[in-house]
Image 1 (spheres, rainbow, N blue to C red):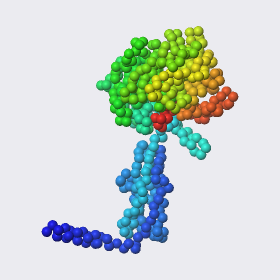
Image 2: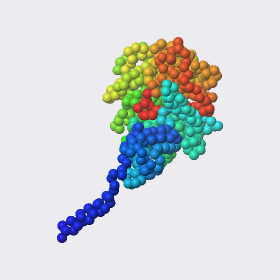
Image 3: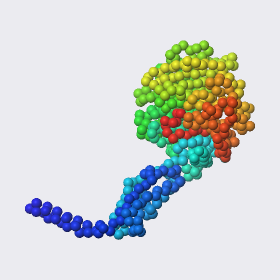
Image 4: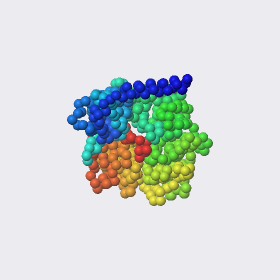
Length: 513
């Protein structure tokens, strides 16, 4: 009986298929559809235009066709050419269908993608003060033929956050990534208004306030951060009084703000000198180094914090040198009570986990020296070595220093240290490591310099001025020497009193270079 019922069902199904398949297949105008590319992108706010190229078997009979564009599965357009404009960072899958109105047949080609990207992925970011309020600006750029075109954007926090006020008394910008392949955020350090704010690095929309990142939403007493660093497994906040507040991150791939900061200051376990006051973090010049260098002003020494794994992140190591220090070299584990650290920076001369450092010291007799050392935390070596030549030389140019001097070393090469001087901090100098000499680079004629920062590969130097101007110079090796003219690439004003500038990188890998 069951076999008989099954046979009847099969016969019925065959009958249905035969009835609906009664098309005149001779009346079909087939077409081939192709695209010039299958991935389209534009900066958000611009328009993506996608035009299919259609080749008909019968070119004289094309009016019978209509068109359908499906964007992420939804029918949105019935024109042949798709034009998309979005004011957000978003990715779409777009499918084009060619509809034969006589037969009802729909023919579609391989799907195409349409992506709207942020105009703020890479460029110069500015923190400035305008009308007694903090604000941010951005200078993007693109190459058009052989020419670089720059585009300034102003007051971006208000524009991105429903006209909300960012805050007051701006201090510093810090870019960071949760993982090497993920998006970025920008920390705005400021003293007034809503306090320190984390911004989405692609839209500048507010993500979270720093007080919300502490346990129970409570900031430590006397909390005035001056810097923050964001290695993968342990984030560190440096307070003005030398205390460090940290959070341990077990899995960075989970993204931002998954763990709270501890409101109890970080302690150096088993410290032989009993106590530390960190004056600054020294940013690594290469992303594969597995340590953070810190200067302890209490004992005038350098300390190294391991950051390379979950098991070692937060461990502090003393600075042990592989050889004896040369004559006149200030020992890194204790430079002495009367030796003053004027400037220190990292730079990269190798890609094997070694990071190189340079510093300017002032000695009790009023003389200055330029010292260098290397530190290798790769493969657990944890060892200080000195360059074979010129590990310690007299520094020439200290007479131009003032209490307001700003410094920046070109981290990619370590060839030059740029610094400001003059009665109004309006003169820009550079120290040539190779020549052991200091040269005047630019006179801003009374306008105070407030911030210095190079771009990726250290071929350009951005300069922020108190009068709201941003100036960009070519400081590549071919031009940044005393016998060549200064090359000004771009200048733009109207930003308000600039407090800090950074070069905003498109990836975590580039951040350190």
